[in-house]
Length: 172
Image 1 (spheres, rainbow, N blue to C red):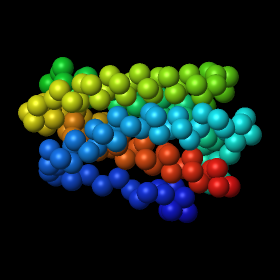
Image 2: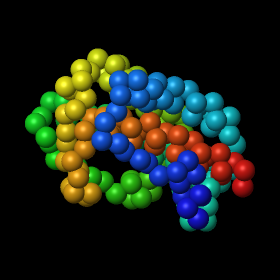
Image 3: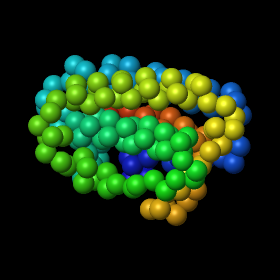
Image 4: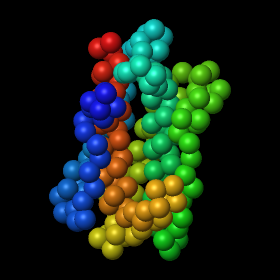
């Protein structure tokens, strides 16, 4: 079950990231929208209903979730850059993914959101100084302070994590 839930392994954050590690993770974020689009753009409606394990989200839900999650990433980044140690607003991703528009709209809508968000996200991340990369925010759900470098690492992993889920679903 662990391999199905975390097909690329669990996220591991470190205390210190080198400039090269951050640059690699930003490249991951830059190439992610095209990698996702390549995998899902020509899927049939039947393919979009496939899941990677019993009780998991469908491919369609995964794509909509990624759009929502990565939009939250961008907002959290902006808050961390413009406020002093802000408390971010958590959300229940399981409830968000099940809202009506995600059932009704094609994945192309979320693919457009992902492409736009990643363009803005990567453009901003590429301008950040070492001091800005160390800015923090507080996540009340996990009762944890995170740095912008942690956010970069998380979303670099998050994209790969869900691409692996889609791959597993397509194998089913």
